[in-house]
Image (cartoon, rainbow, N blue to C red; front, side, top):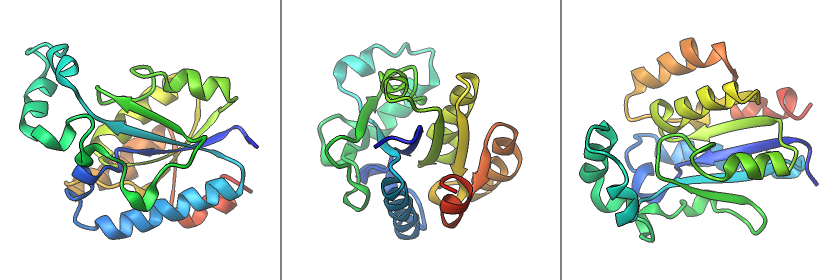
Length: 189
């Protein structure tokens, strides 16, 4: 069953979740959001970031991302435990799972095609980090005309002040910012 809505759980990976001070709480809220989405027939999609040698070589040195990838080392190497999706929010058979090699996951993977093929017009976003994958996805998805919700308490960033600024001042321009507890009343009403 598909109701035109997808919950995207982005970069909830073993090697990234540890960079968040309130990781356990964020994982629990994301797991609750997944349960609500599944109960209402929404598609659940997972985005993970992971690089192999060819992916790293494809990024020109002029791109600041190249230096960041080198700095992260094994935390973002493809096919390692660090890039696996955290077990607290694991995908099920039939869920969308994509691997990205850029900050934004929609047009840099086949995610957009998978969403369109399933008739998805509304996205609910949860991710780490707010200033990375969530920001990029909000901007790109808004330009692609998706209805957007950002789960403020299922997103996190190593810099709490940056998270707050994005949640309070930037995202509301293109998305409805809600808490996980509001999912049933606002998205699945």
